[in-house]
Figure 1 (cartoon, rainbow, N blue to C red):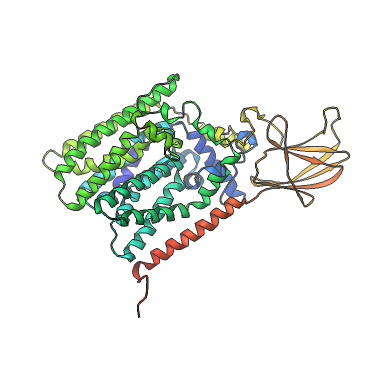
Figure 2 (figure 1 turned 135 degrees about the vertical axis):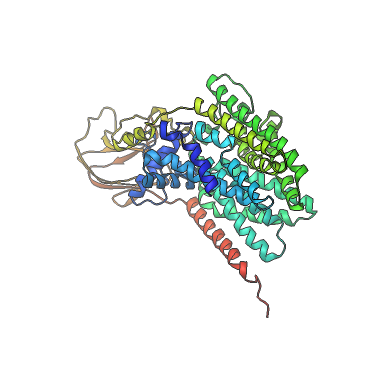
Length: 544
């Protein structure tokens, strides 16, 4: 932990001088952290609706984006302060990354080599790319857990007796679910990596047992994360999820050293490609040396599995794999083939540590330090430094202005670019264009992220237009009677028809059937895992 924490502190040392780097996704994650902190103050423990996105019209961002990273970011912001939130997140995630890698490497390597593996994984080139240029905190947190996935996967595939298999299945399922609950693209990487390794272990053992155990562990992992996955899959029909694959975001445009008609895209893709090429070359060379120095059967098995996923990750980053990106389920939603560096980083660190044994082993340590130092320097020079990102978002939320939304989370039929930036939260409008504006009294009793309660008094028929996107999960009651809201002509903002008189209007973000089903499945899967772990010290079937 000390080695990993020191490496993590070295990564964020420059933050003390320049502030946190404003990478591609910094504002996206920073906005989520602030939203979550505000909703916790409102008593909403698990947010589902991003209230201030789309200039206050909102979006269902938290339904589609896994919860662990934005909950951790919000907690760190509340405890450490928003200026230190990003740096604190990096230190926490990368310390966990090093500890995870140490746990994996220590199974087959000596303690000193495992410590170097932890150091190398904490500060591997892809991590530096993510921290300085991408600011994808969710992917960073998922990568911190990834070595534990390989560790529990190996334990499960090689489990002997049924009691040990049950215990290892429970542990693998928890780690697998944790990765999905950190970051969906990382979950896809974990799923394909696990399937590949379980299949290879079955072939090596000439037995279906590792494959069947793996399928059971993966199934339990999906079950635990069902409270997020089922709504995220089901409710895609209500948003423009296809925008996630718009121009510049398709796999075919992001293979290593691919150029398109976008100079800014090409510069970043060249940086990512150069980082990947360096990792591939070093991992390959260190892997050859590590194979020659392997001392035990367990280490050779470990080497084979890591070399397999390293080769697969390399192949999937180059155009030769384009057919797989088109046909394998959900693979296209990774968007960027170079994301497979997340998987490659584990064999990269392990092979370097394994190759360091012997007389000239120090050369590999020097090579890593030079590589990490040069790539880190390159990323620091090419990133954007804007210390006002979080304060600007805070001010926009406090003043009720909100911030820009995301295309793929916009509701079907809407174009978020048409939404006004300073719309009132609620306004009474005439029913027809020829009608004069009605005389009204409007009182807001309650207005939170997931509940709006208003009282309206009218002398004539009118309509209430709310600064709220018309999403199917919203439940509307007028005077206690449920109605289905309409949408305005120009956008999908919520519009309610009102008759003369005094009306009490309640708008709540309800629990849809898919969310209920996800909670039930997660509860059952978690109960099953707890039973498997409880059985660790007990026989599964008591004998007389």
